[in-house]
Image 1: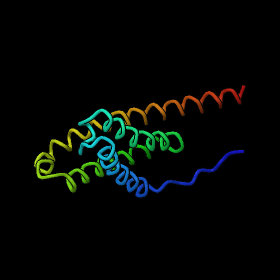
Image 2: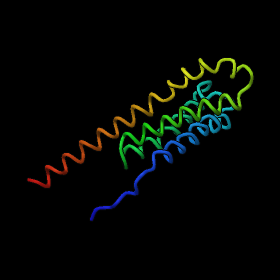
Image 3: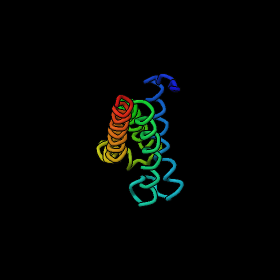
Image 4: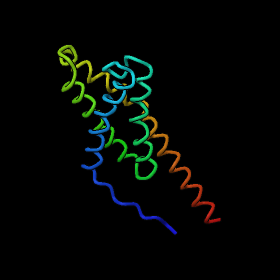
Length: 132
């Protein structure tokens, strides 16, 4: 019995990424007390957790493209939140912050690629097992 997945709406995935991107700055600030998630180890861990979980789920259940659409939204959400709710110093360094926040997406992007590769290898081996 095969389960049918609901089709994903790219604008919906993008919007979810925007929300989670903002949350990936807001949540760690509550946990660590620092505005920027990479200022403390705990804040960085919380940020990466909030970004990696939905990315892994999207890459596993759907396609790696959905995970990357999500990450584009997360990137915009992180930077919009930092610019909108940060102090004047954060806004002054917004261009550098936009570059540095790309580093926060390396682990989630790598995870999306790894999960997608594992999924493809797993589905390919099950097809060969069924054929033989």
